[in-house]
Image 1 (tube, rainbow, N blue to C red):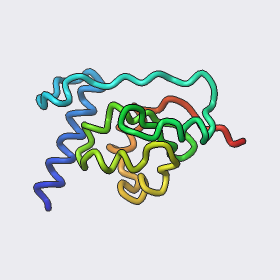
Image 2: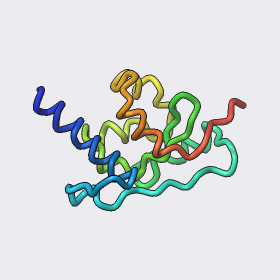
Image 3: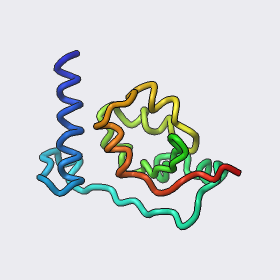
Length: 119
């Protein structure tokens, strides 16, 4: 278990270095980093619900909208973990899995595209 935790943490660390332009990530599957396009207006939960699959995966966490499409194949915990968040509010799932871990919060922040409308 400790080896797995070190491997996952190491992968996230190198991923964040690449996102910040601080170094190359050696895993071929992560050499092309995903790009997200910011929303021009707050999304509704109905908007988010239309992005509920592998080809377009949006989720809401703490009132912010994230496009996780590019992270699905890269997630150290496997695709299923991200696919379970697509098209819905993933706040409790994200915090239940990651708590207040800064590394995961920093990775998530790089996928923020906007906010969700409170209407």
